[in-house]
Image 1 (cartoon, rainbow, N blue to C red):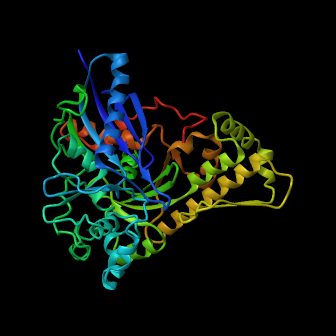
Image 2 (image 1 turned 90 degrees about the vertical axis):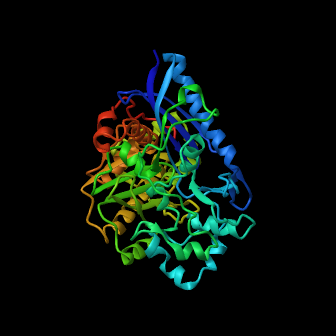
Image 3 (image 1 turned 180 degrees about the vertical axis):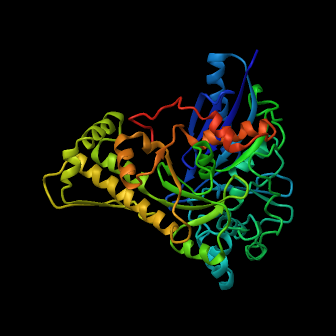
Length: 470
């Protein structure tokens, strides 16, 4: 008799995580694989579509082997994909990849956006909810069009999660939260913004038909995967941040979800879209609006480099290992250390920062003092993002934090001092977990309420550890 499971796959810019849950929501296995970008000296990064799929399916197969080693035969009921939204695959009219997958953080596309008609450039942020920057899919499509990969009639653009679902057997389908990160969607109507597509030299029908997150999109029917996946229901879970909010039970209207990973992302859930002028003001301040993975919900999304700053600080101190993090936690637990606060400043957590700046005006400092200053700076930057949100929407009614840094006691203490009402999610890897919840929902043919199902399947079986793998 086989063990029935579901899988959530988070395809991130740093690594892919493939997670397996049993019917009770207990984690049976997780596999992590670094995303194998081809990088250049100018900050560019891309990958062949087939190589990316191979990497994802390697993680999936490895996670399944882990379960089969301990439990024997496994049968996957459903599999869902989440991850980076802006990177995508251009398919030709025959449905084959026509260009490399360009990383969302690759600077390509900046010059093409600069040549847009002024009227479109002025409207861009108010229409799309995104800053006019090379990070969005529209910039990559503009670059592809000008470098020999011009999309023709019948071409299609799929985000990476949508494309992997398609390879396994789903029809080309767009999920709203992922579509809203392309820069090609009019947030007011939820439809493609035709004038921008035309200005980029792309066909009006470039974006696929949309289906909500969790919609069953067929079953796995490819020989590229283990037998255990054959016949599994396929669905697209959506953009990783709102998917993580589902996994952390932080997806209701009025909730602020604080994802504390390498980059700290703050996501505010709202029940109706903003007006164009509000979107314009937010994007000018570096924030964005997009769609949530749940129907009739939207998100405000802002971020800092707080997690990156903290990681670099640990490396600077020579304490980027389990023992070092434990030592800092113990030192910061000492009220005397926290109370002294010698003259030291740390900068570098702002979303646009590229360097860490450390200013010390005393010889009487130690690693704990530097760490305390870094934590306080990271918290101040996240508070500034929240304050910007609150200029357009009411203060959040609930706050939930999740992610690798929340496993450090000193980080949790700093976050609680910054946001006294915060609660910490009791689930590890919330994006992959949220995807697995959505896979279960799709396998059940979307019966019941997704929020209730997330609560039903979330168990504190993986309690926070003192020493995280960030």
